[in-house]
Image (cartoon, rainbow, N blue to C red):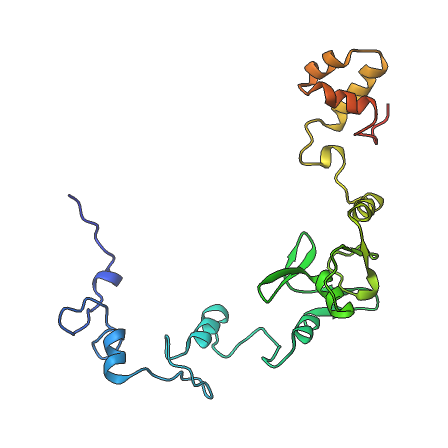
Length: 229
């Protein structure tokens, strides 16, 4: 049976001086648990903080700030605890003469945020704050800027309206840009040429390794409409 040799930084660490305690030393030659039992828990060393010490003489919050930012006093948030959800939301928006841009988390270009444990689109939440209700319809952008939360640029719409918007603005993945497409535009161009010459759909489908209905859809312009022979 082989044993793994521990690095010196670990193997040389002292153990707690309390009998039968195998924890490592925290302070005063004893572990953290026994230190708290004997001396009680220290208060965070940051002025004005009444929380108990967690690590490096700081409370958990100030320790995390030090770990992330290198300084226990630094915080990236400019929002005070007394601010309302509406004030916190708009504090994360940059307002220009046209679009109001959400500056925090995004997904596929659209702003996202969590409100009371629920995931919202930033433009959906802007609609809710402005009009007082969460729409059951799609919230569409008239400006075509996904991160915009300007209520003047938002409107309600149906799934069909949303699809039409994507088509009108060229954002719908067509042909080879569609990740599920099995054919390239060059292949479809050749298929349409063969169909025009009178080739049978079965033989074309076999040649290109696709199903017969795929060739039929191309022939009747149910798909790949933008490819012309």
